[in-house]
Image (cartoon, rainbow, N blue to C red; front, side, top):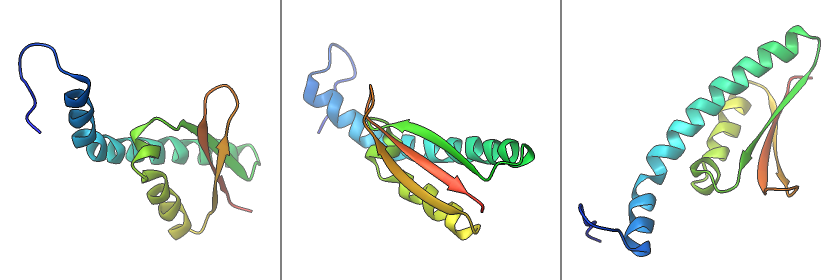
Amino acid sequence: MNIIKRGPLSADEAHGLAEMRMDELGAKEADELIKELQHSIKEEASKGMFTTRISVGRKSALVRGGFMNDVVAYYHKLGFKVSLLDVNDIEPAQTIVVSWE
């Protein structure tokens, strides 16, 4: 699909552009989530806690592109117990729960 560089984009063109960039954005968001989880693990462990969790909106490239599974695998390799929960409160999200019990 050709993307018009000037003038308004159609919905199909905008969708195509977003799809082309989703993998790149998802990988970046996965790296950011890992950094955020590392910080949270250190913080919670220093308080005597054995678990941490972070929610991510379902519309994010991280969730839509399947990158949450990469984050789960990353922490499994480090010996953590990891699970993904679907949360449907106000805005649908996935929550990653990391524990070290």
